Structure formats: C-alpha cells, structure tokens
Image 1 (tube, rainbow, N blue to C red):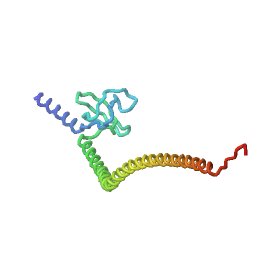
Image 2 (cartoon, rainbow, N blue to C red):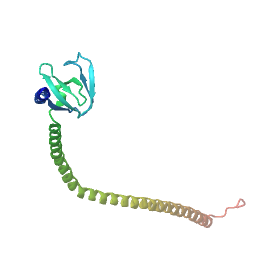
Image 3 (spheres, rainbow, N blue to C red):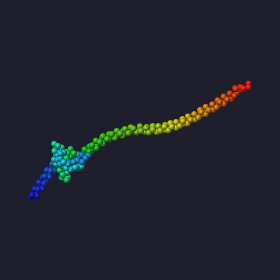
Image 4 (cartoon, one colour):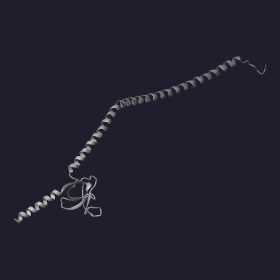
Length: 189
C-alpha cells in the first residue's frame, strides 16, 4: 500500500512538472549561449549551450526577461528568454519562410538579369563583329602605311634621280652651248 501511494505521489509530481515544463530550444545561430545561475546578469555563468540545444523551461520571469531551464543532464540555470524558441519546428518554419521569400526576391532578380542578358545578346554579337572589323581595318591600315612609306621612298628616289639628271643635262647643255657661242679670243688678237 505504501508502495502504491509512493508511486502515485511520484506520478503526481512528474505530471505536475510535465504540465509546467515546456521544451525550448536555443535558436541564436551565431554563437554559444551562456546560461546564468540566476535571473539577471549579476549572477555568474552556469553552463554554455550551443545553438539548437534542447532545454526544458521550468519558470519564466516576465520582469527581467530570463527563463529558468533544465538541460538533459538535469542542470538548472537561467537563459535570456528571447534566445529560446518553444520548439525547433518554429525555427524551421521561420527559416523556410525566409528561404521562400529569398527565392521569390532573388527569382525576380534572376529573371530580370536573364531578360537583360537576352537583350544584350544581339549587342554582344554586334560587338564581336565590330571588333573583328576593327582588327581587319587595323591590319589594312598598317599595310597601307607600309605601302605609302615604300611609295614615298620610291618617289623621293625618283625625284632626286630626275633632279640629278636635270642638273647634269643642264650642265652639259650649258657647256655645249657655251662652247659654240663663245668666240675665241686670244690674247694676241
């Protein structure tokens, strides 16, 4: 009989504890959370918990924003209430909503970029054609410069040669006509 009463008392305590206790998860993704020995920053650090740690909340204090929790090892401590989620599913749902929103937002941006790329495709083809034409024209220009230089050199040689011949012919004509038209004056006459 005492055994049955003891079992009933234990079950009653456990049942009352389970109605008061709620599962909570640390959801701060960026860092390890340090729990305290009391419900304020004035208390010392009790335990550190990584993100996603499952805790059982025992009591919360609305005044200062701390919740008393128990971890899987039975260690009691106080954690800032805003760092706890009632279930991991809430965090998962929030993350899914954020992902969906990002997909929608970035999906629009991706579609805009794709349409912009499609609009630029003919321009890129035209640019390639023009670049090819420019390269061909640069080669042709260099060939024309070399041809012009060769022609200029040839012209200069021909002009100098013609000028030289003209001077020589002029000297010869001057000498020939000078000899004919000159009288011989001798010193004895």
